[in-house]
Amino acid sequence: DDGEKLIVRPRNLQDNATPAGSSMMAKQLARLAAYTGDSRYDEAARGTLAVLVEAMRQYPQAFGEALSAADMLVTGLAEVAVVGSPEAARDLLATIQTPYRPNAVTALSASNVDDEHVIPLLSYRTMKNGEPTAYVCRNFTCRMPVTTPTEVSDLLRPGV
Image 1 (cartoon, rainbow, N blue to C red):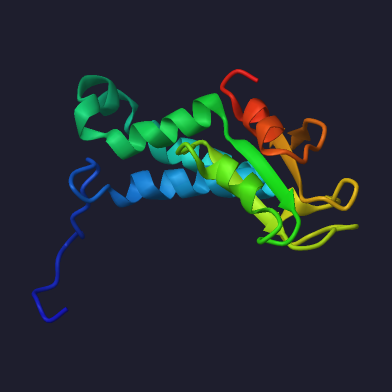
Image 2 (image 1 turned 90 degrees about the vertical axis):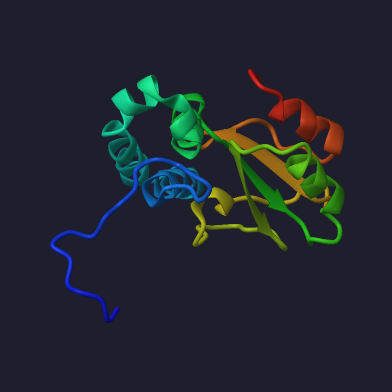
């Protein structure tokens, strides 16, 4: 802070040991779009990565995090809403989180949500037969709600 005034603040676009801020921002914007359904976040993520397209083609090894964000935008994210107490939904949550699924976002509500919610992904989500329930969606279009880890795993398979 006490250094000389810079004409421009240097910014690294490449992902090194610490990923570039723009790459991390694009990834978080893609996740935010999946939580909210707001296309502005998706457009902002795409715009952030658009300036890197040619560099990513020429030097992919220098843009690991940016390419990960691009993968999220191209393949889409699985949006998973889980309704049920964290203790009761432990097996469902473990299935969603294992193996590592970078292209999935999860929202949890401890109780039924009968109307709009602050997190749109959780709006109008209720437990099925009083059991912890998972709603697996893509672009806010959901499959039938499921209650077992096996069913959740099946719905999270690539290409489903």
